[in-house]
Amino acid sequence: MALLVCCCILLSALVLVLAGKLMSVHRAAREISALYQEKIKEETNVGISVSTGDKTMRQLAAELDSSLKLLRKEQLRYTRGDMELKQAVTGISHDLRTPLTAVCGYMELLKQEELTEKAKEYLSVMENRVAAMRELTEELFRYSIVLSKEEYGVKEPVSLNRAFV
Image (cartoon, rainbow, N blue to C red; front, side, top):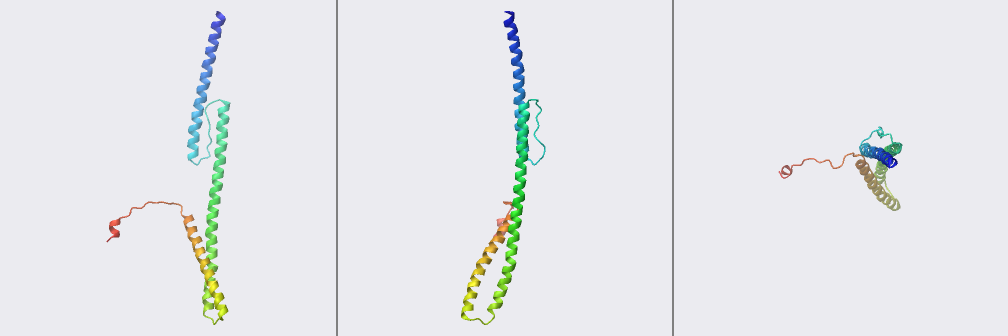
């Protein structure tokens, strides 16, 4: 009978220790979850750390921290690539507009010369192609302007009463 009482006391102590351990793990999980949500929203290099001594929870926090650092690195790479692409589109659009304007000027000068019918036909084809190219270049230029805008949907108050006066 004494052995049974001793076993019950031992099991009760073990249950209390395990319940304490389980509560500690639950607290650490909530802590990790809250820190993860906080870190994912802000741009910070401060890692996720937990106050528990549980090895598994510390490992989980370290792995989440590592994943966040990798995510931030990829976001930075994406942002830089996006900026480089915008700059390249803007540069290309400007680089195309300048020689195209010069070609149009030379075509205007050529129109003033005395030309054969065949040369006039060729000049007409060139004008059509240059007009199409100018339209595409202008579209690219407008696109580069849209890309360079950082804010969309900025609301401004508008008084319609003044519009009808």
